[in-house]
Length: 217
Image (cartoon, rainbow, N blue to C red):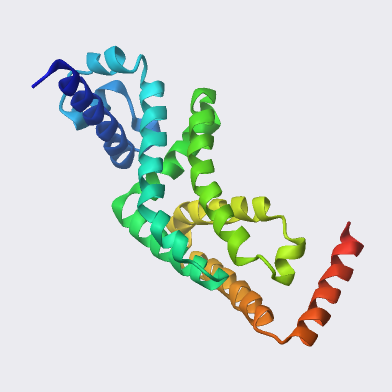
């Protein structure tokens, strides 16, 4: 095996070990020792390849999130309605939760509250999801009355925050988390219903939305 290939494999083992350590111990229990144990390597290699545990966690966060976003990109590309977006979101959340990826991101978010060095890479990882969702929202809301007034970027961030927050919410109130998803789905059904209206009622709805928006501005 070439030296370059060996270095790459060792770095990947450390990244995988960092993610495994977060899943097993939570962010508070992550250390050079727990990461090295999960990776099956000497902990000195963490500092040799990454410089610090925080730098390793930053790389693990951004690379793993980028891989998951690429995995779901084809499904996002097929979305044509808000309801379809939420269906993908529910499947994504359930699957990523089963794999432990949602828990890892939630733990890293918690860690970033106490460690400023994690804040930037965790925020960058979240933007990968948010940018993908924002792109879908701009496509599905184009020409919709809601698209005329909605802050699409803010809505994308709200949806990202909601699905990550469900990981924490479900731990203490599973029924409440299910109710929250159901409420989002009801809003999606409402938006789809408005979009299916004929031109006259759609104009009436648009006028009503514009009046409410004007009062709030």
